[in-house]
Length: 185
Image (cartoon, rainbow, N blue to C red; front, side, top):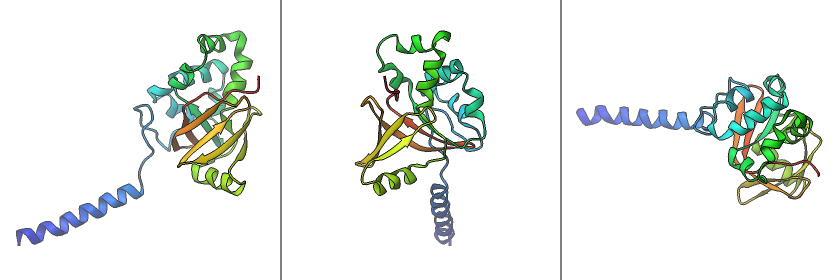
């Protein structure tokens, strides 16, 4: 009788585990919990991997915009992505006199739509392997999918790879990328 009583409990735990996986929460980003009920800025400040991006968004005066209704898709470069830029680039961009240039760089990471990875991969396939993504900043990114990864090539030939996809926000979605997207120089 004791063994019989345990089997239904174990079966129920397995069902619950499967149900939890089917309704999994957003992935953690930079050690921070990303809540679907919070907007892009509210979540980004919780990621220790995005402190440079948050500082840049603040310096560009884009906090209110990216906290707005949206929908937005943000290709969010990590601190390591910013560190790949030539020495002094980030410090120069963060200076008040370079606000316009910083805004251009940041808005080349934003699309005025809610684009989940599955939809982007379908657009890439429908377009024969490469899909143009026009950003709020007017940049045209070339999106490609290969070996289960989505890459974005900027107008200078720089390539960033989506490392964490589909981080749902109350006003859109974040896809974490490993390189900074730059506008045409």
